[in-house]
Structure formats: structure tokens, C-alpha cells
Image (cartoon, rainbow, N blue to C red):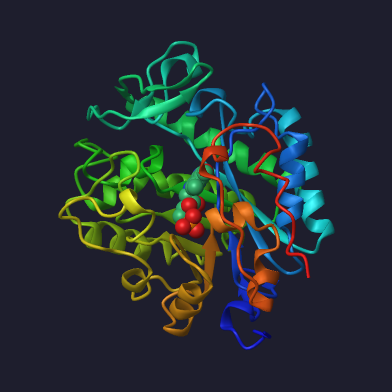
Length: 366
Ligand SMILES: Cc1cc2nc3c(=O)[nH]c(=O)nc-3n(C[C@H](O)[C@H](O)[C@H](O)COP(=O)(O)O)c2cc1C
């Protein structure tokens, strides 16, 4: 079957980049870094396998400082060694003719004390919640977090700026702020986790301040058209919630318009079984944000080829990111082009492990 007529496989512009198709690799933390948080050789292989001519890959979240990590095995972008190791990833992807953005994240309260010299994880406010995090000893309960002091914020923003510089030094094509899934920036933006009544909370505008400071920092390094932002307005990962996601994210998208960003990356409300809507929370996704955001939108969450084509045909998004299906189908765009079936992903190998169910998925045999 020939599917060259699919919009999913047609060219699109993202900032100054001309992509030959719209099948994006979604950021996926796979916890296979070296012990010093450098991307490992198998990570180079992983991204290289998933690079296709004219395609766009977004990396798993990389951490701008030692104490911004939430998971053992997640990669960093805070040392010279990290730059060297990420350069291998970028070079391998470019050798295949693809583009690659680095997702940068501070994990905030989704962490545990052992990861930062015994210090409590941080968030704008203390709003207790329970989850499990992956440690050297397997999955354990998260540590109680503490509220950030205002004077600590500039150093965190500066760590994001330096991470953006390092990503540039490593030869990446752009950076994405991880403002989704209940990590630090998201806990500032949403009112379920931001109870501040100061310059960083109390109103929608003030809750967006931290994120916009990081966006400013990224833009100062890269220029706006090489910077993307990821949001999950209806997600519940990280026990995040907002009393009025339409207002919060509508306002946020509106303010992002001022930059002329490369893209807004939106995790759809219906994503992943249990990680769907917070009870009573309005479903806010690409369809809603399309009305406000003026640049390209990447939609993500629960898409297969038909669902992706559908949202593109409705013009609610410009590109579609695939997570789990890309994990087990290194040649996903080509499979879509040829109408080949997809190989089932292996959830047990998602977080940590070796090459198995990571870089040993073959391309479709014809
Ligand atoms: C193993 C795994 C790791 C993930 N890690 C990240 C991450 O580092 N950053 C992020 O923004 N989203 C992360 N996600 C969410 C994915 O980017 C994506 O939004 C989600 O898997 C839904 O898309 P899918 O249905 O195509 O898999 C992760 C998802 C999975 C399954």
C-alpha cells in the first residue's frame, strides 16, 4: 500500500527547519545513561535508529543541574562530558538527515532526597502527594518536598540558560522546555501546585512567570524559532491539576505568541489510560489551544497513524509526536508510508535496563 498522500508524510516548516514529514519522536525517559549522567553509547544507537531523512526527534528530558534530576539513569546537560556525549547523539542523528531538539527539565518535586545530597525536592509550594520514583534500589516512595525560596529562582533559571548553551555546543537544532507532566515549570504554572502569593503566584500571569523566564533564557541563546515548549493541560502525571486549565493554558499560549517560537507541543487530554483527565478537569488540548497559539503545534498522546492523520486533516495540529510506538518501531515514518503494521512496545523495558527492548527492534523486513 502506498500512503504518499497522507498529510502526516508531507513536508512542514518548524522555525527555520524544513522537515520532510510530520512524524515526530516524542521525548521518552528511558534511564540508560552512564553513572555520571552522560548519554550512553546505546542511547546514541537508539536515536540514530529512529532518525529518518527530514524527520524531527525530541530527546528524553535532560537535566540542567545535578540536583534537578528525578530519576537515576536520566541524562544530564550540566557538564562538559555531557556536551561531548550529546554531541555523539546529535551527530548520529544528523548523519541520517534528521533534526533533533533537546528537551530540558527540572524534575521539581518528582524526585527524592538521595538524588540531591539528601536535600528535599523542590516546588513552588508544599502540596503533599504520593508517587513512586526510581532509585538505585528500585521504585520507592517520593521524598516530601519543600517550597523554594524566591532568592533561589534566578540560579535555577540560569541553570536552564547554561543547559541551552551546552545543547547548542553539542550541535543540537533547538531546545524544548519541559513544561508538562507535573515537573518544576508545570508546578509553577498550575494552581493545584502553586499556592504562592508573590511575584510567582496568585494570578495566572504570575504563575507563568517562571516558565517565561526560562523561555526568555532559552530564546537569548537560541533565538525564538529554535525553542519549543511542551505542555499537558489535562494531564495528571505528577498529581498536577488546575482549577481552570482553559484560562491558565489559554493565557500561557497567548503570551508565548509574543516570541514566535518553533512550536508548542501539546499532550492531548486522552493520553495513556489512567493518565487521562483529572476528575472534573476540562479536556484542554490542541483543538482548544489552536484557537490561541499562532505557531506550529505538535500534538502528542495516544496517536496511531490514523489518529494522527485525522488531527492533521482537522488542522488542529501541524505535527504529531509518537512515544510508545516509536520505542518499538525505529522506522515508524517508513512503516506509516508503506502501511506496515507496528511492533508492540515493551512496557517492562521503558524505564531502565540494557539494550534489550531498546535498540534491538528491527526495521520492518520486506
Ligand atoms: C517510557 C516513557 C518515558 C517518557 N518520558 C517523557 C519525558 O522525558 N518527557 C516528556 O515530556 N514526556 C515523556 N513521556 C511522555 C511521552 O512523550 C508521550 O507524551 C506519551 O508517551 C504519550 O504518547 P504515546 O501515546 O505516543 O506514547 C514518556 C512516556 C513514556 C512511555
